[in-house]
Length: 253
Image (cartoon, rainbow, N blue to C red; front, top):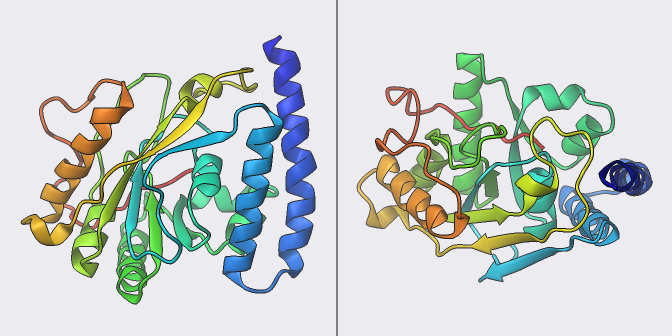
């Protein structure tokens, strides 16, 4: 059953993505391209019987904010694309730029790519993201940086919260539920059934917290309240490399 459904899901994805690539190749304006990508993502989840259900107060279009979400599945990037307004810039690990179709789509959608192993590149992207946040662009991150089979919220990296604190824009924690079951780490085929939900938590105002680390802690606690998965940083070491305040999270899609 899973293999048959998995083949159908892949077929549905390719049927939607290939025309989308053709459309994005000639569509002017990054926001128009992002709007088309959001419609395509929603169509894909509807086609596989798992439309993304939004809970809480969705983010209005053109809001100045930094979104942080938990990361549990290969589907999470598509889920955020379906859930968020078309004004968001995503931070993506540089390896994704070389993937067929995916790399083209991400570039046409104005994504920011970062080499996690290159300190100079991380610093360059950090400066660029702060500039974007100050200018008013909305940014989206997976602060865990990666995912695997183990359920739970991994330690956070500090980059998203530093950008929000410097730009004085709110951090909006998002909780994605159902994606780990739908397509977990290492799986080739998606599972049939199952709900996909995105919970919008209350914004965290960095002006009400003393540091980026305090913003990180507040956002993390808000996410844990709705996640139904364990805290994998129980010693409060919620981010690695604490001396590197500019280390950036990577957001695989």
